[in-house]
Image 1 (cartoon, helix red, strand yellow):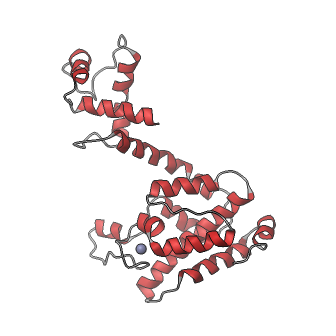
Image 2 (cartoon, rainbow, N blue to C red):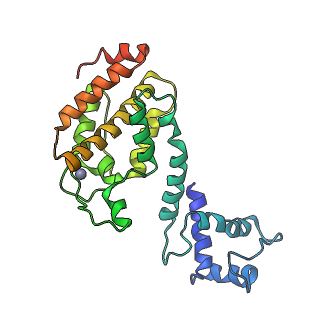
Image 3 (cartoon, helix red, strand yellow):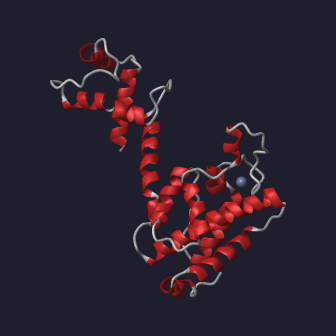
Length: 247
Ligand SMILES: [Zn+2]
């Protein structure tokens, strides 16, 4: 995927007529009076030239065409983001969490929870601070990745499950961390996705309570509730394993 991004970066250079000798050369010999978007892919050109021109689709897809500068890394992360969006289906599949928790997680994964940054984008005048940590602006990525309150809940949950936990700072890293744990049919993968959905739901409900009911709970209580719900919901095989663990 890094190669794909590197080729797309060259295509971007071409489209923006970046002043590099060989970019000028491709423009003169292959693009001629056309633009990169409309130039035919020359059959007689080397495979590399054809690949570079064909990568206009990647440029289009990653919406980098109109940017004034772009790096290989930026294109790479957009491509990675796309593949993760498809991969998160393993979190949804055969998940034993409550339907309302699975639904909230489904919205969260698609960035469709109505966080205040989105409300602001729609022109609504709302208090944008995160009600969980009261330190940063609220967004999906903040609430679920960077927020210290959520991190405390995670730490507590991972201690209960006796699993290693390392915090991540970006949504992309967080999601790939989740996908690695939710993939496959192992007992741990099944536990992870159920716990994840219940955690996403627990955090969202806590956030709503603080906003609409002016009530708040500690991260410890939320962790305990997730433990309880998972113990109740788990099928027998998972239940046996969960019951060996003490919260
Ligand atoms: Zn926060």
